[in-house]
Length: 334
Image (cartoon, rainbow, N blue to C red):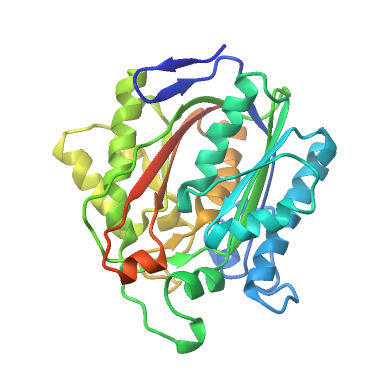
């Protein structure tokens, strides 16, 4: 059975696996360097819906139906659905879940939601509370802009430290089937608030949370960065990734060449996206697409996913509150 390792990390000995996955992204993401790693690139970012919120819900519903189809299973054989998104009261996930008669666990971790769902799903499997768990998340550029910044119709010019919310959705089935990478460890992070208040530079605000979770994971497991072939953070973007490296260099941590960031990489240098990508879907599609493809091809054998989230709301920002942040780490092995 699983056990607690150190102070923050859970070790899963029974071998819960990501046994099926599906990723879909918008047309802008489909023009980036990892287009071939995604299962589907949408022809447009509306899908014929009247609002972007309805489009986001449809994307998540589509990812869920496709992953069930690929797994050859029915929603009635799934014991739990764990999902979350960026919108108020996680409405995208709740509305998508309303179409499925399965116990629903709605979570909010901002851009760290996917890793949180992976860890919680592994806990349910390891504890023998479930045999199949379905997880999912989605985000849309227009819905996030409207909620956290400005309606896109205003054409407000972004700063270079701004990140662009990824339009996309991802879903996965976790089970004990004999395929897919194993989830071996989960380090659930603590909330870190360094007093930063700029919602246009969330990467810098989240970097200390990623730093703390990585340090706690390494201390708990007795590992170093060099024990991993790849460490994928998300979504620090270019600015946050720079801050994370500075924090790690200050403590002389080795293996920084293994660090990559989903937000920094999902878009290409030819795309005007400021500091890169963000959003609940960003690290999800990069993990289930880019990372798992490389695990399956044996290009990497052991990976650490460190998903970060800025736990702000539009209201607290207007009230001058600082931005609390979180990071969760999930270790995967082929």
